Length: 275
Length: 117
Image (cartoon, rainbow over all chains, first blue to last red; front, side, top):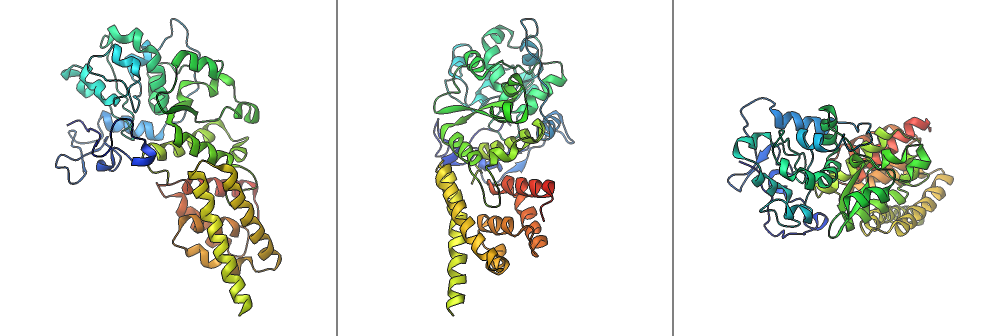
């Protein structure tokens, strides 16, 4: 049984910062829990042991960012699409034009309708239930590949572990020479959404990271505007005991350490548990 | 009696600024949040100067608010209550919810890295 978001009281476009997690009914984790009775979350029985879902979830949870390589025409996200990429909280409007049944801004989980039944096991749902990474075998969705290429790049940014997994499988983590180039290629984050850098752009100068590393798809994620504002305010503030702002405190730390810190904050936001 | 009252008032003001900081972050207002931090600095500086910082903050290590526990523990690092402060921060950083946890983790990380005593 595929977990579905609880829309009880949460209509389309509901902001996660206001309504909490859509997956609160499974403790925010539809990867390993479901709730067939509607009363209590339970562990999903997938045949015992740590299956592919479990393994992928573990990989996502433990993954460190991978060094990206610049994508070329030949080295496109076709590889990433075949080998796996992360889903988005809401389907970008463009998807509705290429995938029947997917309404603009609907949950990406509806993407499952485009996957043949015998391929359903290839789907792997991500940690927070708000992203839906999945594996797509060669040939599947090939007709949509071109149209989805840009969206796939965006999706890979949501759950960086999936981008890492794609990288490990020979996929690509696409990067850009500037944030403007990223936006030109990927468009806006979505209605009432803003792009958010997990490792901030300012760290290019402060910590010596390359522009392309900071503007790679596994470092940029779309967040609801108010959540983005809260996280940005947090980075700009000086908590008790700090001699400077959170942002400045991160100066000089490794990319991996800054990344893990940023991911920790974002995961809490995605789970509706920022406060 | 007067001294006891001042201690109580200062403790309450400190706790209010500790929680006020997070309220303003939730409002996406970093400047207002920083004003709470600065107000807390004034209190901490005065009581540290009087040699009574631990007396002021020790009870707050057990406050019902994680935000107040974080603030007091963070300000008690490097004092004779450092071990208890570290224990509080370590407990806070394990909380899967809220922004206090990553803040406590970062505070501990930088404090240990800098070797502040």
